[in-house]
Image (cartoon, rainbow, N blue to C red):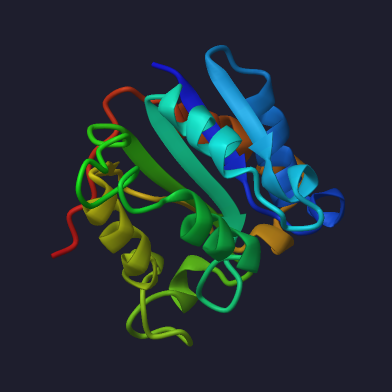
Length: 181
């Protein structure tokens, strides 16, 4: 299985968690790590190149910090420009059908905060529902998201362990589809 990890972090050098997760992923076989903000600092996305990358891989991982209960802005722009009608969905838009989509996020808030009784009042999978809807539209299999809670509070050793756990999770060929209905 070939895996594409798209890193959407506007300032990866200042990130401890996403930088550690990306670095661990870069050491794996059959994994392509693509730093999208570095590739497009002017946000002028090469649509053909992005579509080609997607076509060459079986599992697509969108990794990003969870900002305001969503993704960094370049991910939304990337979706708008890359996942086009006639290519990703709609008439003859079947290029991603059967591929797997995994969302991998880091949060500043701990898991208790992302619960019905917590400060946020919603779980992360609930807040990621637009990505699940997108997955349904483009014909990918939406896998249970990977969430690293409370990333900013983690000690270096714990972060190293979590990065290894992330790789094991994201590359698990038997990862389950999400079912929160």
